[in-house]
Image (cartoon, rainbow, N blue to C red; front, side, top):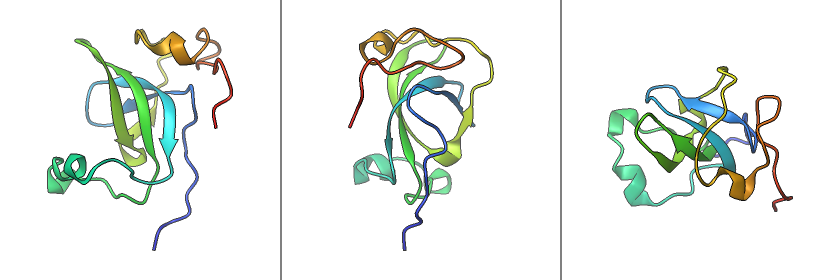
Length: 109
């Protein structure tokens, strides 16, 4: 049975990974896992997150690069640094960093 769970984080919010050194801006949310089985199986079994929770698409950055990440809710924390993200694709979706988050440029479905 799947849990009926609401997403903890919202579009434009900055989060960070619990275990890995990266932060990102939420640009999409899946109510439950919806990536490929190959992607899921590539995660070591002892570290695999449950599939019946929200998964977040992030414009992510670390000290070396920018990328898109797909992360389970259990592996995210709210970023409290108050620092903006520098991802080069950010302004395709969001306005300027305001009050600790990024406002959407347009309404998404």
